Image (cartoon, rainbow, N blue to C red; front, side, top):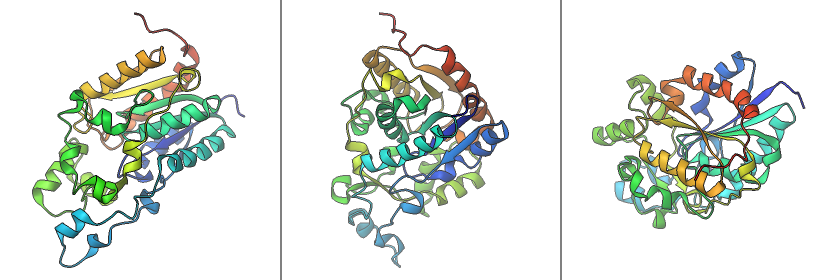
Length: 295
């Protein structure tokens, strides 16, 4: 393993794919780092669309009730895909694992499984939840009550087997809500492109799988959280609640960074995000992960 090379493993959030990092990865590479990305199982190139999506004329009732072809994707499948990428990163240098939004659930699982392979773990407005808690439970917490993303959901997730959105909708009100939830500080052209990359269905497994993190393993990895003050998908109050809850549960502190950004900081402020990420390897060397939270 190289003593100096840092390899960032970049994990996208719900409904997104590896293209979310298209602006950040080149900036990291230009700074002398490596950046690895993937489409998680059930996402991007691996996502299957409901047949009703392409029916002409479009039938909103069928779209809201059709069983998801992605319903069988499990959280463990996603974690194992990322473990494999972390092992590749570790063979090249110091791995820093970065997760956006719902990708936070995946990177927590990976940090618990292979803590010795990670130099640091970083949450970008991500779901960072204590042991035994699910993403759905956290989403229902009062600090996330103003989140706009749930208003995008189509149909009953229990019936569909997934949380479904309609990123290709031509309804002006729905598209306005989609932009407000994820991309409110992004240009209209960038929003159009970003929305075209989204898939419809996120398997319920990701929202229902309890976090399984321990002080001994997950807690041994220095962790960072990038707070987004203008986030309408995971409001700042919810981000801060998760930071405090994890710190109390694990017994050491999360290192925080703050950006005046929407949920999609990789689009709105890629250069600033890349600079924050580039500083993390040196911060990880200076911070003792066993430092106790003051009581």
